[in-house]
Image 1: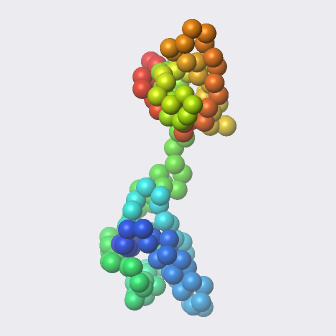
Image 2: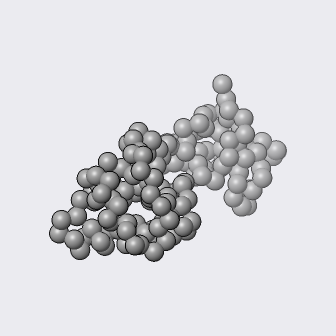
Image 3: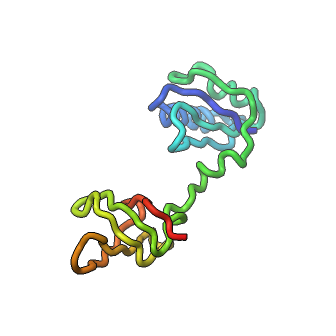
Length: 147
């Protein structure tokens, strides 16, 4: 069973660490896993044998503000466990904007995508001589998708 534990925003890791320590110290702990998702602030997810095991693990902990007793299906957590590839939407021929210096704000056309390395090769649009640049996918923002 996986339940959501409400925490103070910014204190998720401290709460998860406290639960982990309690589970390690107790010989009969029924806490199996903890998840502190990057994109969701103020919540952590705790997997345990049942609701009572999770409740006893969080009882009296600093920065815990509540427990949502509705179980969370594992399907809803898959995006936090395995985030999608950032290069998924970027295709050859797409128009992107570079988000890092020295070409920040420049528009470019994607000439190739290397999903394994998480890189794209682009050519700047507003230059006399096209210059190929290889950038990390996180350093470009998709403007116009090639269809």
